Amino acid sequence: MKKGAGSRNPGAEKLRAEEPGAEEPSSRLPSPASQRPTTHLEFTAEADHTGERLDRYLTSQIPDFSRSQIQRLIEDGHVTHSRHKKVKANNDIREGDVLAVDLPEPEPSSAQAEDIPLEILFGDADLVVVNKPAGMVVHPAAGNASGTLVNALLHHVKDLSGIGGEVRPGIVHRLDKGTSGVMVIAKNDDAHKELARQFHDREVEKEYVALAWGLVQQRKRINAAIGRDPNNRLKMTTRRADRARNAVTRVTWARDLTGVTLLRIAIATGRTHQIRVHLSAIGHPIVGDGLYGGVHQKMPQRLRPLLRLTRPFLHAERLAFTHPRTKEPLEFSAPLPADLEAVLRALVPEDQYAAIFATKVTDEKT
Image 1 (cartoon, one colour):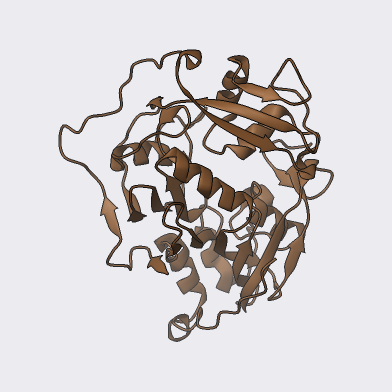
Image 2 (tube, helix red, strand yellow):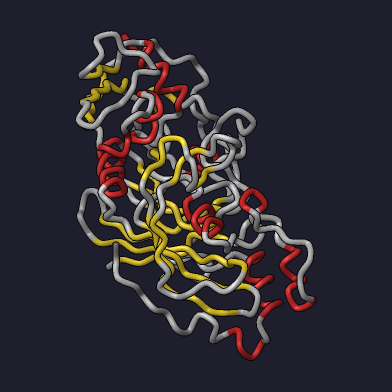
């Protein structure tokens, strides 16, 4: 098994700049989608998608496309629906529906390449693995048109052959803006489809490190569907959720730090905010997570270092999957970033810190 690691791995490299004069992606307008060759995709809807809008469903199945891009494909006649002759973005989804999408062949990316420092853990002709820093959004969107992971990858990765409608990185999964850690990105359509399948079929191993309030039991399993909170559209919830989808979170390892618990967490599903929502739902929100009740102002003196946190204490430590072309097992990890490590060191006596991760218990997979 090939392994990669973060900044402590000599094989990892910080890529900050390419040669002067490197060509930037063209800023010309792409040709109309209807005039370009296409790649055909088909999806059969499962039961947990029943009731979703067509555009939301396709956005979940093709992670590299934003909802507005999917809507444009629908408007341009590139989507068919087995139950609807006239296809609209708000068509409903039922179990067994067959949706076909014709994705236009790549055009130069509409996103701009930006020289943003980025830690590359691994790269070949098919994929790149990075250690995303906290504070970086994955996709350009309203309010975040620049400074994103996609902008950085367009600068550092020069051998993209195209994903769907543009020559750009293929995003197959996401991390929240405030979450750091390991991500894999596809460089071409074939790699994108196979990695997306592995994520969909829950063949990818994803493990996180988190710090939660209170005492969380080792081997804790949280099985609760997650959906959009009808009272706050910025949040997800396990209660009275809109179109909730099944989600399972497992605590594979726990270390009691008196008042807070250091956790390793594994997830098979990858719902929006999943770990944050599930820990909050059982009364143990992630420390520093203001959206889900994890920011406390009153605490014992020994826990005061937690006030230094400017984001949730959540880090995607490990990612394991199968190479989309060679079928070789791959595993990558990234150590705790400096901001989280500093907080943890302030909570744990120096003579005990080295042993804090010494015991690792792996639970059965779901």
